[in-house]
Amino acid sequence: MQNLVLIGCCIGTLRGHEDEVLDIAFDCTGQRLLTASADGTARCYNATTHSLLSKMEGHEGEISKVRDGRCII
Image 1 (tube, rainbow, N blue to C red):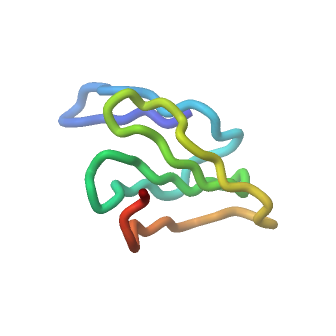
Image 2: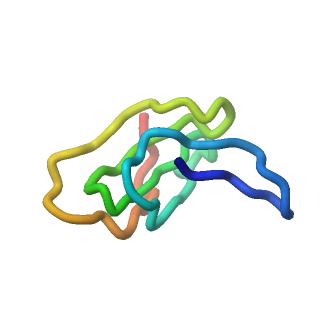
């Protein structure tokens, strides 16, 4: 679970990771949040509703960084 904090107040919670979140970034549209975790998964969430859109798994070991790179369509 990762809490989203803006100027000291929680604005939402991202649920799903089973270990700490190591990195978080918006995609190029600002509509999705990308997360990297020590649980070996990367996830994509709706930035407004905080609902899980996709889970990328199969990586051995932690994922420490995410980048928006290209727009997710």
